[in-house]
Image (cartoon, rainbow, N blue to C red; front, top):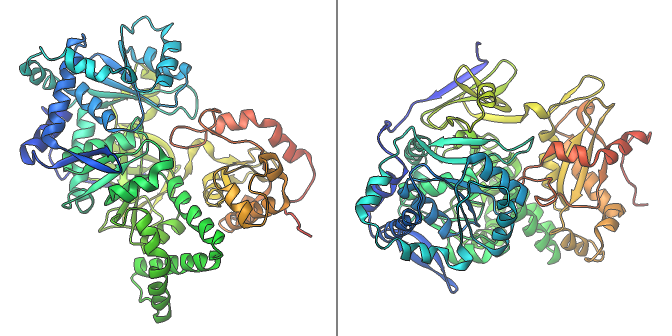
Length: 611
């Protein structure tokens, strides 16, 4: 096959086939033993944990795992929230020679059962009582599980005590058993279609990618005093990789498992960079807008936002900022932007965004706040990042160039394919799926994209999600869905229309933002979801979002009708993955009746009138 386009980024740091993830911590302790590598909540503040202290705790817990009967190569399930203990357990298992099978904290008993049974796990560690309950339900049909620990019952302390007799030499021996090509972890995909597949990620995937990414992103992670607050789930490869990268680079890491407490945590921790999915940036923007609206300053905020975006576009293009725009920008910086910076802790300079498109509007808005959002792209199969914008090499609206050691190309049909140090070894016990996932050694991502002349990648949609209307028009749903989802009243949106006469959409409302929006617009904040879905003012606001999205496409691709569903799509309902991606196949199946109803009524449009 002759690729439509191909870009290759050479490695910066040569590979070492003898090393594994534990060597990253050993090197960090040898270089800076007293450096604060973590910070844990302590009252209203944070207590530092040095690199040497973290290693001491890791070894103590690793000894416990050894004393409990874990052997090198054993698979261990882990169900827990994003806390300091998550990374502590992760490294302790590495040092004991075991292989973690991370399980999302929100997983059902059936999902836990699949991950543990398919992986062949012989042990499972759970954090909270509800995690233990779901695991207990799954365990009935898991004969291989012979050890179970519950952190809420003091398991970590018990393990540390149990391991006191294990000599240091045994841990040092075990931690060196795995080489670069050996399995480091078995991560199950979120399963947007079909049953999750286990991705075999090797030590080399993490080690080589961490070393090369640290060099490439040195302004972010190697700046003195670099710190980050993790709040997205560490069971996902995105946060897992950043956790390991932080240990290698010496970044101080804090954790906040409750996103409702995120703003107070940011205020006290004061990170220099953040890791987030686009939905978080949308929430920050929408919350700020609605707060301004409530204070009768909505017009000022929107004017400030327009100014920020226009200013950033001039800066990125390298064109001179007009005098009048510079004056407005300076005024709004004091009135609006500085307040938002303080809300994020006051020290955030960079934010790394992944898992879904961010959009140019938000990228430019945050850039003018002084927060450069480095949008990247990757999958579980690529150990998270394959491409990422760099502080010195950024184009807002793209997902950046290939990372060092990574090659990216486009197939003839536009599918993005990846090869390099970050690509997984195989799908666990699934040779058929593994064979289907590769094209002559290149991993088929299933995503469609395009390159600019400088090798910056833009993701245009999912190959399997392309809608073909009855008239033969090809439509990528994401182009329409992303801008609609950015509206404060919208929770989620799914564009439909495959083999139908026109494009339409299913919309849900954002139950967190809705009460504030209703109050700001003179309506009862406690309006029921059903009433809100039928309210003409709410429908008009959704129509406004749809109209904005339609500007990006031709009339044949535009949304002609929409339905607001009086329900929520959540992970618990089976319609979202843990990283808030929609499970399109489940939604199309469960709401087939609502979709049929759209096309059964011969109405030109859902435009509403407030007369």
